[in-house]
Length: 337
Ligand SMILES: [Fe+2]
Ligand SMILES: [Fe+2]
Image 1 (cartoon, rainbow, N blue to C red):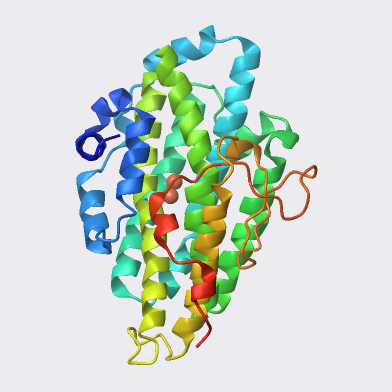
Image 2 (image 1 turned 45 degrees about the horizontal axis):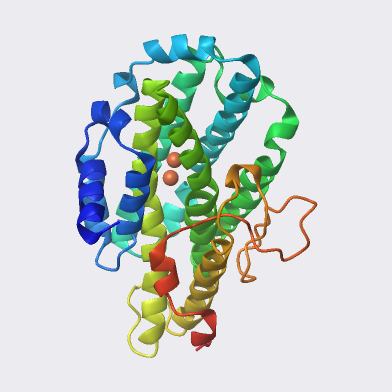
């Protein structure tokens, strides 16, 4: 992509109203995700995007989706429903667990952005609730959606969402002044789950459905979800980059009343190792993050997603693809203060 074509793609994604998102390719959405990782993007610009990019689940028209779904062969339906249920689990889990991260965020602009994100995650959950009920014929929310598929289909994901994410957020709830816990929470939530696990599944679902011209209601809504997620991932990287910058001025005045002098060095190590670890996840290329596989390296996150067949410490065969991650210095640059 040339610089101009990237800018065109970013504009197409950022300015599209909900009805036009069905015509926006996932490649453009990913170009826009990368754009939101640029150092000049700050929380105020992410907030302004949130105001401009509002959408309503109730505006989506699922009538064609109902027809298309019925015409799919049963095995294809089952496969897609499994993947969609993983997203349903994910959206419900992140909606339920984000509040401690907001409460403990040390900066006002971070708390404001995270408040917008909670609204987004609630909307994403409602999107899946409505889609499952109207198109798949599965009413009753996430509980009924899980009953409709084999427990094995969600085994790995449930470990992450029901234990690792919950544990990370619970530690922040119990220790809101523990900066390291907050940074690790951002890594788990914004980088591992949103920036890694979700992106691959989003890409394959949207690309497949667009290629065959099916389920326009789902495609429009899920593209809106992906656009929201790009802001969230951008915030996660921004928050970690801020801790790394604080490391460089850690011996001066603390940049937040809640932040103790000297703590920034430790946070920079956590953030730097996490980003370097996530960067290594992208080394293999290909792979489907929805299937799980690999391990988050760097020793700071503790979220393991590899299947049993993978050797311990195996590099995850997936792709993050965010150029900004590669711009962050390696962890050896950061030495505890
Ligand atoms: Fe979401
Ligand atoms: Fe999100």
